[in-house]
Length: 333
Image (tube, rainbow, N blue to C red):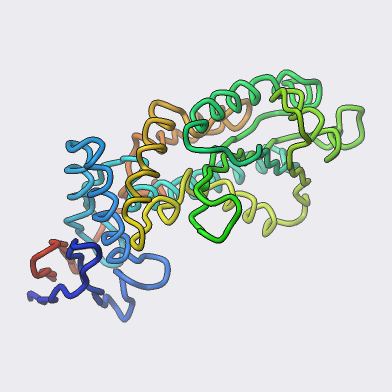
């Protein structure tokens, strides 16, 4: 069976896939609120055009990312992803994979009796684009210095996960318009005695430590919160928060201002090039090794939950092909 869907959406001269509906067992697999494949393919095509202005080869690879998808039942079975950190399709898959992996890590640690966690956010003031790279250098060095303090050294914490996020202000009416806000989200694993000893870190103390680690002349905004031991919902919210994209595509794909899109990527691409945006330490690093979890940046983005289940022959195979500027063909069977 072949279903033909006409293209009818044009953004800045780029013809993109129109909304697609594919139902499997009464469930829409391409646009169901969580898995908006068609919408993300549109944004990936837009990003490929802008990135192609900086590096044509990277732009070409991104343009075909997720073009061909094979589903078995309701599960993605085969696909090719470019893995570029500015690809909306890949960023989405990496975020889902990070959440799945961290959920498994937390469950593993809880089985080992490690049930206490701190959720920490560390920020600096917004910076101009030409200062972003040096600000990130300073933050990476500041993070290393923070881990050497009594409150966050190995004697105080059991492990950590740290994620760098960069947001871009694209609101013309905002005083911080076209500035960048890099910040860290982290989860620290501690034991119960941490909250009763002299190493417990309050909000005021964390702000003091981060200011000193960054050598700032102002008090930065920080956040530190203990995750309730008996609240798995709060723990999952914290895991979800740190699983977010390093940078959201809405911060660099601005269809109403294509010049700003190109300028933004000309800032972000060199500033983030070669940087490790996530870091693991202590028991979280060891748990990942025990669970044999692959690297989110270079690993499998098809089977994001690490469950490569056997599929029965009775499950229908659905092949979806996106072609910008042409009709789409969805083959079922």
